[in-house]
Amino acid sequence: MKILNLIKNLSLADCPLCHETAEKNGLCKACWADILALHETRPVCPVCAEPNASGAVCGACLKNPPNFDALYAAFRYEEPFVTLVHRWKYQAALPYSGTISALIKLVLPKLPPQSPFDCVMSVPPSAQRLIEHGFDHTAILANAVAKQLDLPIISPKLIERQHRVPQASLNRKQRMSNLKNSFSVHGNVADKHILLIDDVATTGSTLNELSGCLKKNGAKAVSAVVLSRRYKDER
Ligand SMILES: [Zn+2]
Ligand SMILES: [Zn+2]
Image (tube, rainbow, N blue to C red; front, side, top):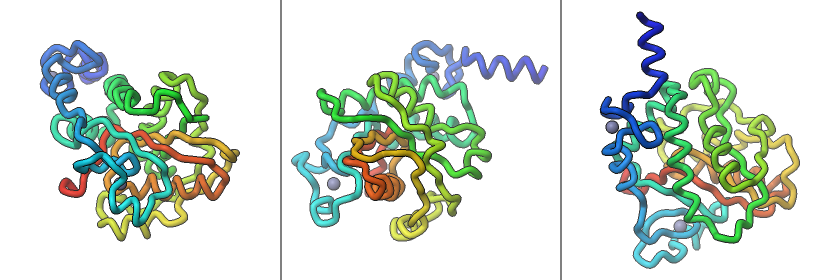
């Protein structure tokens, strides 16, 4: 019986959000439409993707530029997106990967039409986190993006991430010091414009730390794509 339930869950015949019949990309029509309605259409800072009135580079980025050059995000961090991403990430719901991969592709029209990128790379989990989650969820996103943009991928195995306290439990300042020197690069990234992929950016500290590490190793530029960017008033 248990096996039958497992097969039923894996088949994704039901929408994981409401248990109606799944159609497009593993969700039912209504839930897919709910997520598409979260598409960010406000003007944003082209560096940190935080919304502002003019769509110009924001004061925070002018005063203190992050190590990455541009950040692109598709969705507002609201329901039902939050539930879907949490289940996929924390309940190791690997079958949702098709849905999430379809969602990350919706960020790509925001990228410059003449692709300046040399390769795609995912923000890797630490070895311990990989065991906890059961799969490298960001690598799945990076594969979907690389395939869509026809770009080579840098293996996440070439980036080592030391295990640290989960970022979610920390404030902005603690997040930055928690991540300090947590990445090391073992591959050749010299003179490359790297497109970094992550699921959700909260303060951007992880992307910032890894971008700094890539640039120290000679990367020419680092842009980043995330499914969602949490904004200051949502943290
Ligand atoms: Zn549904
Ligand atoms: Zn900014």
